[in-house]
Image 1 (cartoon, rainbow, N blue to C red):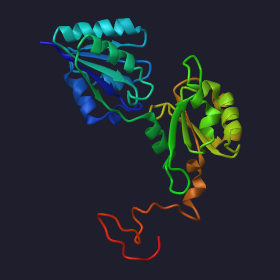
Image 2 (tube, rainbow, N blue to C red; image 1 turned 30 degrees about the horizontal axis):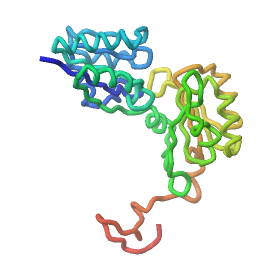
Image 3 (cartoon, helix red, strand yellow; image 1 turned 45 degrees about the horizontal axis):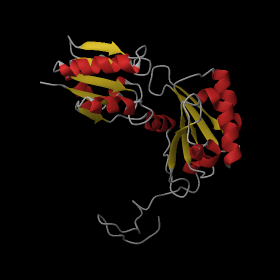
Image 4 (cartoon, helix red, strand yellow; image 1 turned 135 degrees about the vertical axis):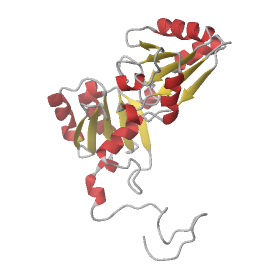
Length: 262
């Protein structure tokens, strides 16, 4: 009887930030393949004794697919572990396409994205009422292309909360293009390196100075860039921006407004 492949989001780093479903799926898998350059080894350690455990950092796509397909044909369950959530820059699509060509069943187990772990580490809400209600996840063009309609100046024109993956090595160009697109040099910015890992590092500032901080820290990989007014710590002082959800004057299906002011 054929087995099955599970694509599992490992979460941002700390092994206890994987979902219960993800952990339990790894624990019952016969074969575990994890992105060892990005996934904490403590996540792979959830594998049961006797399971095959393979790091995929030095493997090409064909190598990974041969291993997965061969295991499934032998009736084994495969846990393919990606960092964060596999739907965001996870290189999962090309693997799924091959599995579908082979008529192999698969399932995706979502994970906690580093975006949300970074927001938690910064102590911010990315969607503050009256400040920003849109979050854009993107990357700067590099070795992997980006559609022209998604270039950074065009996205910056929205003034939304912007999260950039895989772009910290180009931080100076990122800053230039975001300012060219409409962000003020004073726009709050942060860079979060290896969030929830033991060597996590958080840099806070504005577009005007964040590139200098990154250069001084010598960050090269595994860092998110987050930009937008929602990061401003002053939002929590003075005039507080509040949603209608808990406004005493606001009625919704679960509560009738009783008047008064927010």
